[in-house]
Length: 328
Image (cartoon, rainbow, N blue to C red; front, side, top):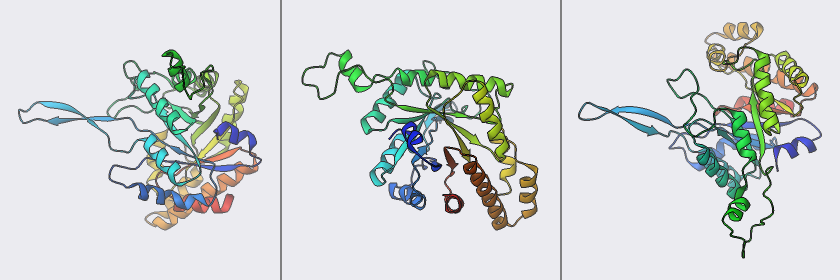
């Protein structure tokens, strides 16, 4: 089922999850077992992140350096297929601009359609390691809004057959291909993207993604619910009417009060910051504080009528499971 259909038919808030594809060397069974603890809470879908290929320079015997492609993780499409083979749940692979040409993106869409996957989260993606600003792949998309437009223009297998006049004895309907085959979600930063000069400009860019055909929005993590409520209000004032799903992640270590703001350009409230600092070297205390804070956030969001709550698991399950037990 498409996420848009799930959102329109659900009568109460539901959880969804986001996982990171495993590093090479992890087995399919290990991946599926890591998801198992979540399934009793009936998440409606699982997002699978995408990571662009990286390059590294290696010194050769003659002293010169050559560039080598490095793929450290299993692809998001492969992970989605593995999940679908075990669990009766919808999957939402992430599709990013970085690292792919438009033709390569179309090939990825072909693979998703072939597998029966009709949900996508369309993102620009991060910079390559060592870059300070995002650089589009030659022949690729520069912005998430362009990627959304590209997905909306995708004609699928019916379009492919029609363009090659493979109409005779074809089991595929050759009616005009449905440009709404994919349900498209997009991301948003409630505290603005670090590259945006102000929140108004960032929301204007978000509006471009929605106007291009996005069906819903998932926010980056935040630790103060007022940030989310204010963001939603600003979006509605800007004419954005699609559902806006809050994204949450519980803190699990004291170190994260420094690393997460740096990585995601977000604020952590003073009360939470001080509580985590007071935990000091007591890792169990820090873990408990982060879990309790996120539980409080989740309950408050549900009380305010959010359509769903999206959890960034970051490969961890115990704290998310505790929150799901308390809230759903």
